[in-house]
Structures are given as C-alpha cells and as structure tokens.
Length: 204
Image (cartoon, rainbow, N blue to C red; front, top):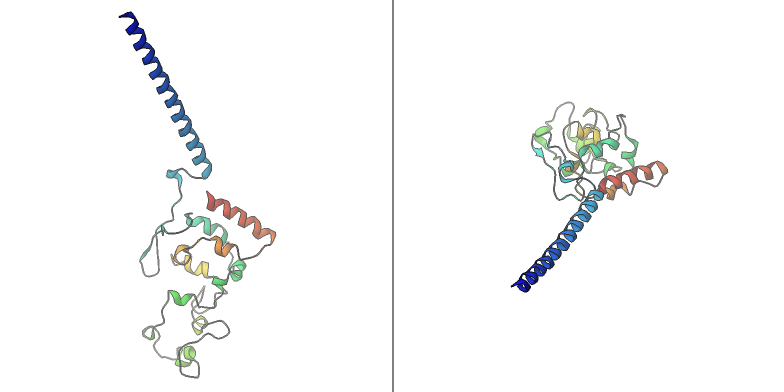
C-alpha cells in the first residue's frame, strides 16, 4: 500500500513537471510573438484608417481594402499639401502631367453641360476641323477653360489641391502601391530622404 502511494506521487510529480515545462514553452512562444508583432508597427487598435470622404457628386469614397498599403490620408497630405499655390514635385510625376488625359478617366464630356453660347463655341473644343476633341501638344482643349484653382484658369499640374478641396480622396486615383510613383521621381538627396521616410511609414 505504501509502495503504491509513492509510485502515484512520483507519477503525479512527472505529470506536474511535464505540465510546467509545456507552460513555460507556451509562455516563451507567446512572448516571442508579442515582441515580433511590436517591431512590425501598429497594434491593431492603433492602425490608422483613411477617413470617409465625399466626392463632388456626394458619393462616399471609402478606404479600398485592396490597396497594397494602408496609411492614413494625412500621410499623403503631409508631403503633397505644401501650402504652395504650385507644387513643383507634381510636375515630375508622369500621371500628373497628362494635360487632362487622366481627367477623362473620371470626368465625362457632355454637350448638355456645354450649351452653345458666346463663350462656348464648337471650335473651342473641336477646333476648326469638325471632329472629336483631340490631344494637341499633350493637352486636351478642356484644360483651356477647366483647371485649378478657378475653372477658368490653368492648374499648372496641381491636381492634388484641386481634388482635395473637393473632397476626393487620394485613393480615388491611387489604388496601387504608392512606391510605384514615388520611386520614379528622381534620386536627389532631398527626395531620397523623403523616400526613405515614406518606405518606413509604409512598412509600419
């Protein structure tokens, strides 16, 4: 009877030791996961979200979950909204210098909105030869009248300000990894510093 009790106690101690070892290994793995996740960036409750914005037609532009990166709108605006009437770096981005080519991806031409009068004639859009408006020197005739900051003045390529002022989110046009455009601008020291900062933000 005494031998049986000792054997049971030894078996119980082995079970307790195994349980303790398993508990220690589990805690170590959980601690390692916490450390790894804390180095990756935000905790889930801290992940910045893009605001819901309304475009000029009143429809909501919600954050697109298919984006490669998820950063807040302020990250874009921090660099792109310099407060200057003209943002020179915008002229270096191919997509911002299409002379209206990119406008037509969202904006449609409508004769109902352009009734013929003293200011709007067929020739202003179509030229002297009847036909569809065409690109002339990399621009379309719409730009002659409709551009930032006043629709009657040219925008000088400042597409960012004209859209932001009307509540159009950056993600309305930019639905891919931001670094696709940001890597093509140039290699000067000022830009490299910004690009390094941008890549750090995207990783976190």
